[in-house]
Length: 235
Image 1 (cartoon, rainbow, N blue to C red):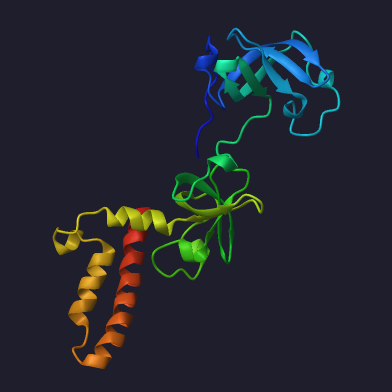
Image 2: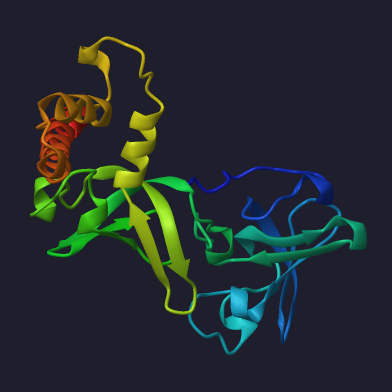
């Protein structure tokens, strides 16, 4: 998971970036929010909707002039001298920051028969379907991961409206294996390469039988070898 930007003391608007954590002093309150001095020569506005995650009816129920508060940069426009702040700690991964193919470090927070839910720092955990847990067939989710397991996952897709994220452990492991050199001795070949080589060597030579048999053998050998290879990697 990504880490929040740590507390810092910038001196110019140009030094600021979204999610930067700052300490400031409330200079003025209005019906619509509070202005906070964070030491950059321009007070930032914390809109009333950004004072607390829950609904706030009166700004002064939360902050008053002179209060020292912790805020995060929501938006900065140095050219126009505008600074929007929030007192709600931002998520490490916002919906608008997600992209297909991104890889995150995450933690398994729940397992089900159909897969595992992994926290990557987004609003909701993403789902690694059982078919995306490993490059080999998985019958039981907990044979591969348990609650609390640290895993690397790739974003396969997401639906902002439904607030769903599809993740894959298999995609990360397959990508790592694909990067391994293939011109080395057999004992250092990737599991997929070794499986294909052995299946070819063991396949029957009879025409019609060869195709069906070799496919089955390849699949079986691949699953066996990948299972052992990836199990060893997780130790």
